[in-house]
Length: 386
Ligand code: UDP
Image (tube, rainbow, N blue to C red; front, side, top):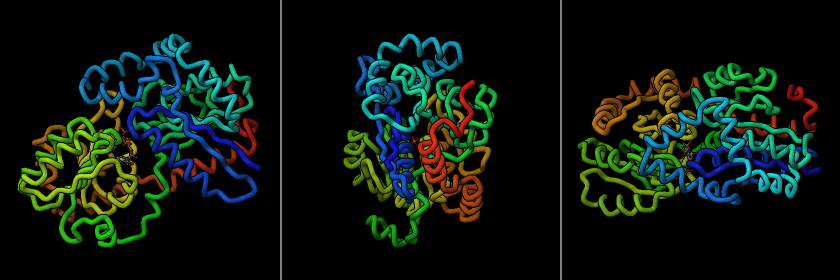
């Protein structure tokens, strides 16, 4: 028997697709009589303008006008306001979403994006597919945006205690709420090579300290000044910079690297982040929830240098309260913080111990098991929406 799982995402950042792929990979591992087929759909790309440009608009907003994005985030973050916006935007996506549902005939719909939960509920009704369960997998931390919270969902999976509490407060029934951790790819838990073996494989120096820099899937924001600050700080380490999909930044750093006093490896979008993180001693990153959760499993302490206004604010608190790294929001502070901890084995070990304590163990595999169970038995196992 084959069961179909449809993941709804939008490529606003890299985290939503990465989360869906992680759960999909874990679904592939499930053995037994039922086979799981899954598909990831970036719904916005098939919709009418302006939704069709959602991904590029998000990248541009974060690159050129973060405060405007922050203002938009806050302006839409209210239960009534959000539901009004959803209604207003319905003509842009409703028909397309219904088509996707009827063509694919999923056994479970999994939304991994805050803009698609309420939309999925409507489209399911439009498609006459009331028997198909809707699962929401939240991939943000802290006081998550109203769009994430859909009390009518058959199941809501959250990554952290803070989000569990917020979901309860916003009316998600506890029997349909599960705290399973951020859906990070199973590969992060499966790396068995030693640090030296990984460095050799990656073509990085075997000895010495490696400081890895990342800025989510888009590689934008303050990655350039942060890299420059660390490269000119006169500290004894090798820098590895992952520029993600930001080809212009990669070209710029490659041009600058030979004239900088610190050795540096510049990389574009990589599919071997689990190995890169395990090979490093410290990760300097923007506050992406996926990256922060992955770093905990890879046991590489973090220095967080930037955050998306509104959306990633809770991630800063998560890093601070859990003691898994430090938050340093100016280049000068980043350099100071890195200088303080990068060669202090005692501090790094303490942060790694905290990471071990909070790391989501087997999150994607556990989420996949739950989805598989729901796919097999349908909405019967979960109390129907009130
Ligand atoms: N990522 C990747 N390759 C890269 C850069 C990033 O696979 O070259 C992944 C990273 O491991 C993480 C995701 O992209 O899983 C970024 O998600 P996060 O939530 O940290 O930030 P976002 O990009 O959504 O803002």
